[in-house]
Length: 215
Image (cartoon, rainbow, N blue to C red; front, side, top):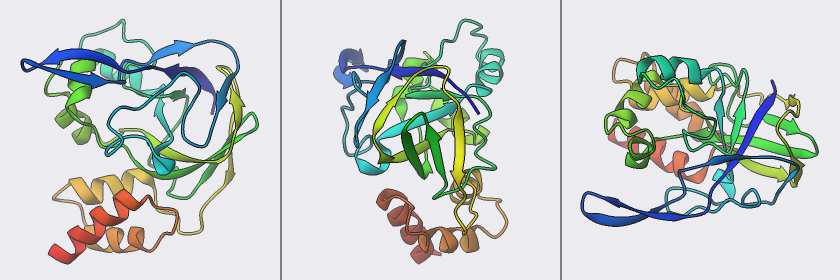
């Protein structure tokens, strides 16, 4: 894997449905070595801290390989890295292989996988397509959120190395589909498995426990 782009954004106000909203989804690539703290990249700031940011969602990464798919589906050949709101655009970031609790090393930074990304309406704003959140979920390759285990700095072009594979071996995509796909086989089993993984984010632990209780 390789880090192709580092993307950040400060909050901006936009009009949506006749209301002013603040968002940091309009990420743009930045050059050079970018410091990473326990909560965010330098130059980046989350707005809705209830749904974004925090220790379990300090960094969001998206696969560079998905850009070709969405360029075709959306008929937008000029999509630029960061347009899905990701901080890190990484080649071969495969949610069907990478698991909850796995650890990646980029330069001197160590990141731990905590949960899948669940898109909100702001993704539709960023891509000028209100159906995008629903289509993104159906495609089930929504990217990965990370906790920062070791702060440092990183830059575009850095190698991304998988340095620890969690013994529970629950792929991010499997968990995502178990939660969102009504036809997913053994969904209850997968979510029970997820609820027992200490590295799973608090947000997703609560989600799967609520779902299990309803089942």
